[in-house]
Length: 449
Image 1: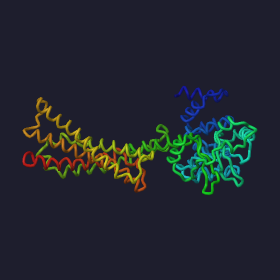
Image 2: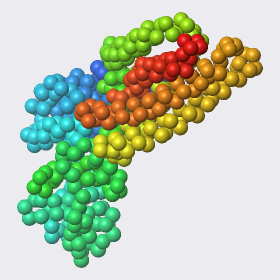
Image 3: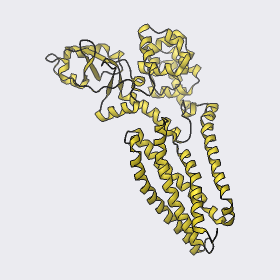
Image 4: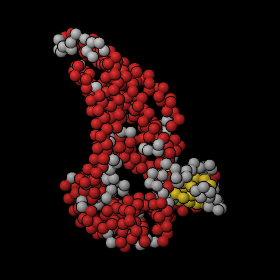
């Protein structure tokens, strides 16, 4: 990495061209003040190209260190959606830069920043190509050539009616394949274009683009006037960020705002300590459950040998179910109303999985006893039955609880990813002990208990 940074810095100093991805990676590893100096010294076009890269995660901090007039110049030339994301991340620090922008750019970016970042409005760009109905193919192609440097994409063109509403869309491929002089643009256009409202969630945007195999999706207001366009690369960037956030939450960590190596020590502690403390306090309930069965533990110490086995099996089954349901909810395979169908599916699944583990557990106890590896006492068969029934009950409960928790959180308008594996494991640990010792009381009463 140090050699890469040195090479990039030397290349920048001597004007040698560098691969864009390598340059972004190296600049991210440098202190923000150094990066700001590099951007201020390089040609504006190159600086804008670097700032436009989503991987340039410290762009907000770097822009804040530049002189306001220089930062405003760069923001003006950036892609509108990327500029809006960077300014939104800067918070109050962006006010001076926004005030220094040209009026049209300021109005456009302010409108974009106002939309939630996880909506179509938050992902869209206002840099799209439009032509009026009645334009010929030749006129449309000429217009594309004249504006392509100022547009994020030219692969999809909006055809507007006389009052400016979206009437049709046409792909660049259809335009190139058509006769340039003999046809009007609407004759090769999609007359009923697929559109989306600006407040639509990004997962729904991604699903529409995937289902209809689109390169871009028009965003229109309630009256049909185009507001912007969401491109497939914007959706990919947004989904990668969303899945990263979900993966972190699923591990019991508050979502990081920056890449792992760029997250400060204090921020890392703050992001992890909260959930870890909550889980620790929850696990105290496990100690309370064991205290409740203290007498039984004193009389049948052998039962404690299988507590880790019981607890981990229930937690694992719950985590499996949670993972499957969260993903199914995220991609639209399940809706809230499907909870009962999931419950009816997970109940027999949990029973079957629990039976499999129960047979394995009982077989292991029998093998160790008969082979002389360990002596579980004269009532070893009853102990094996207790462990077997305990596993059936706990795995069944874990599967059912793990599958229902995401539905409950979504119904309460929380992120289902918050039903993280550690949280489910904690829930199943406490209830698992109660199930295990309750079964032990029933099976071993009159013998060991």
